[in-house]
Image (cartoon, rainbow, N blue to C red; front, side, top):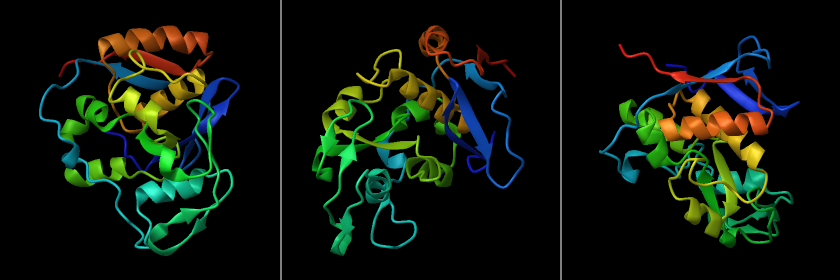
Length: 212
């Protein structure tokens, strides 16, 4: 399994997902990113299995607030108890502007339940916690309009897409799944195959997993 700390996806360039490696030789942007197709793992999921919104650096701001601070387009003042004032945010899913974090949720771009079905069921608790609080790659956790996040639930792109910036959302979904060695199910795979062509994402291979 690929180490979750080994690679970082840094965005799009000419329609391709651009990947850089942390502390190793950078990966060429033309490298093929392979997603494996298999049946989802069913059963056993509980949100509590992914310990989230921790304060890893003990600065008084948990992961939720760290994302809000990092993604603000006007940086907020950080008060006692990590109370945020004076900031400005733009939700990437609908481009709506917020002047308070109250209308925002922090979306696990690949939801926790979807991650579980796609491979996180086999992770230990430390890796699940690392995934749920991942601040190393800005694609994993995203501050978005709360109502959109709640309408999304735990659905994959075959069943839910944001109203705006759909190709960016799709490329980020693929990047997170690849980075964490998560699989795709059959319906999801068919949808991705169609849409990566429409979005001109050219360096993704989706293939059936080989049974051991």
